[in-house]
Image 1: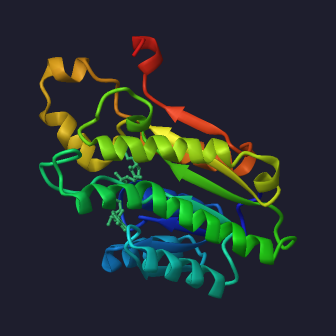
Image 2: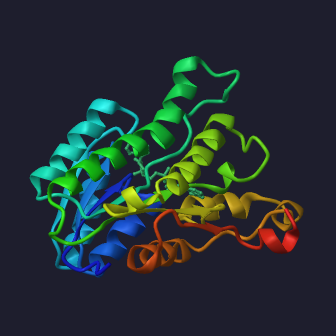
Image 3: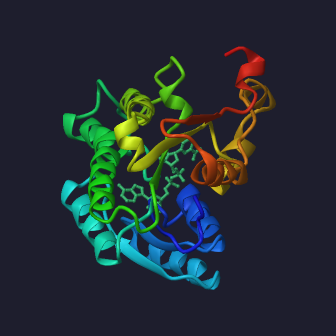
Length: 250
Ligand SMILES: NC(=O)c1ccc[n+]([C@@H]2O[C@H](COP(=O)([O-])OP(=O)(O)OC[C@H]3O[C@@H](n4cnc5c(N)ncnc54)[C@H](O)[C@@H]3O)[C@@H](O)[C@H]2O)c1
């Protein structure tokens, strides 16, 4: 896929990885629809996007909320339809308690944000592409997973791990020829990414704690993987970025 002249919808792009991805795609010539629950943060990303001399729009949307997800898809359609969807928004619900100790609403929200909403937004994206097939060829979706979904432990939030595991299976399941003819649905699955907050937390760890962990993953490596998938990835492809996990035999 040629990224230039496309419209990319990036969720959770008001900060973190989503902002890095939005700005990288803007620099490659894509117009960006920036969705985030934090509107001022989304607007800041749009400033960065426009600095790359492409168009950008900010939309306030809680990606754990179905009505907001539908509104977001409608906004993309109003702009002529997205060619690229990055299902990036994710994370677990704040609070000390996670499943099975968290209130049902709290762990359900984590499932909604990390699995149900990407499923719904992907379906709405596929529907919209079907209505205008031929304009720019086959669309592309990249789901942002997490090593939480691949590793056996609870990862501090079993519901987050379950949702991220589901996101990987959603991706491989949508590698079927019928879906692939409309859009290549792919995923990137990073371990702990070296964003500023992670760098601070890493610095607070003891030497022994750091030695027991795989190194932080450079956000640029995640961006490069997503761009590579968009350009040349195959439908259903999942790219794991796990530091030296393999070398440690974990
Ligand atoms: N940071 C990591 O180390 C790491 C590792 C593996 C996977 N991931 C995944 O990468 C993605 C991005 O992670 P991050 O650490 O950059 O996120 P983050 O917590 O830094 O948040 C990035 C942006 O998402 C927005 N956001 C959060 N919840 C939202 C919601 N419900 N609706 C709309 N916007 C929302 C925030 O406002 C913020 O602007 C997530 O899917 C996460 O699970 C992150």
